[in-house]
Amino acid sequence: MTGDTREERPFTRDVEAHGGYLYTTGQSWSAHTAIARQTEAVLQMADFTGKRVIDIGCGDGATTLDLFDRTHPALIEAIDPAAPAVEVGQSRTAGRPVTFHVGSAYALPWPDQSFDIAHLRGVLHHMDDPQRALREAARVARQVVVLEPNGLNPVLKLLEKLSPYHRAHGERSFLPATLRRWMRDAGLHLAATEYCCLVPYFCPEPLARALKRLEPLVEATPLLRQIGCGAYVLCGDRAP
Image (cartoon, rainbow, N blue to C red; front, side, top):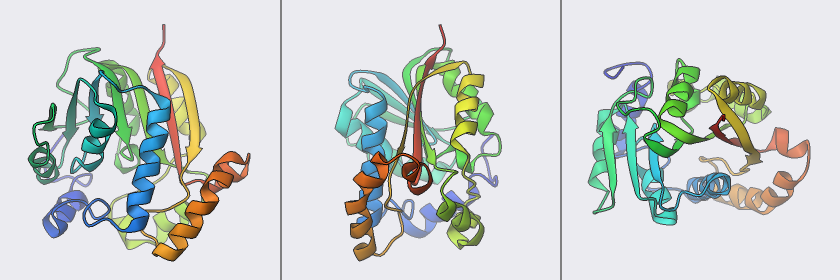
């Protein structure tokens, strides 16, 4: 469902205030670095080159277009319920075979198995019914890649309760085990999972640079990566 809903409202306000989302418009060093590392983690999960891709919860299109430029899929259909954000994304396509649509992740307007890959980055934790969205993604695509905040990270849990930004955007991270179960319940076979990212979007640059230097160590260390990394990425294939 689209319209003036709780899920859309804060993102519509972001676009009206900033001309795009706060973390993609006039990016700080920390936001740029965090988004780049997330993209690297997504690309380790699946080969997007030459594929038909649906980007679910595309927002203002910044990561959609970055994904296209890095991998050159055959096409990307991008969808989000926040109309102002979709307008921003469409205005940035510059001739790329990327089309932005206003619509709901709960009722995607494409037939079964229309796409090779469904991409959902930082979307489910804003949704009232994330499992329904995952089922729809698995319906329209043969492979589903999901990146979400790591629900085992204690700092994220504090931010969700204390940060005005996180609270306004309805953020609630999920445990990795919960995400894995939802993927399986959607009929997907888990092909790969990974903990990643130490640099948060909104962080003073000196601290962000220090965290970036530590990031490879944290990502490579068992237990430490499970509680220290800020994101968890999963890839699921349609079960045979």
